[in-house]
Image 1 (cartoon, rainbow, N blue to C red):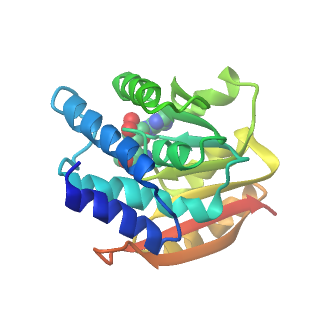
Image 2 (cartoon, helix red, strand yellow):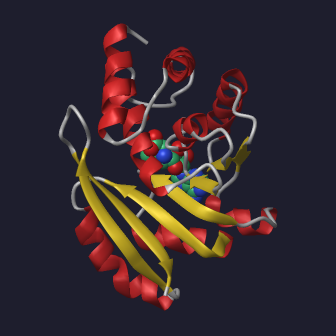
Length: 217
Ligand SMILES: C[S@@+](CC[C@H](N)C(=O)[O-])C[C@H]1O[C@@H](n2cnc3c(N)ncnc32)[C@H](O)[C@@H]1O
């Protein structure tokens, strides 16, 4: 990752209240290089430039840091090239992180990247989210997704995997608050409610972002 991208990562994360040490910058840089290398052969992401990766994948994913912790058992549904789960696993090495995607080559990339980056408490599973409750006994206290599906479909998929005190967090762009409002009826039918909606801007670009937190009624 070039010098400007490293600055975007560190300064952008700092704006979101996340400190990225020089050691972590090296790991993120390694991650970006592998993402670019694999992306030439398999389609992982449309975001391919260093600065864009730093901002739209890394900093964007790290906005979740304010809502998760190193004690969490986190599940990322529809994680693609590993977002937001791998940046979170890097910042919180004690977090137990499980990543799921329906496309096997993306999961193979994530396993490779996690090994390279030393994310020991990370597991990537090739599956459809709908099939997970039949495949896994374990449950999670944070279930997250970015650019995955509409809120009711995501919540329906996450619900059987959620611990009683847990929360579901949807990372949304502009219009996330309206989407959360429109989802309230469907969520109530599942025994869920919107706990909090946080609107903010992505550093540097100023793009609108929304975090929608959902919990049990
Ligand atoms: C638009 S991508 C977003 C990837 C990543 N979360 C990100 O923000 O960069 C959506 C991902 O969800 C995966 N996906 C779609 N439906 C799925 C399902 N039912 N179960 C698991 N993964 C699914 C796709 O394979 C794809 O990688």
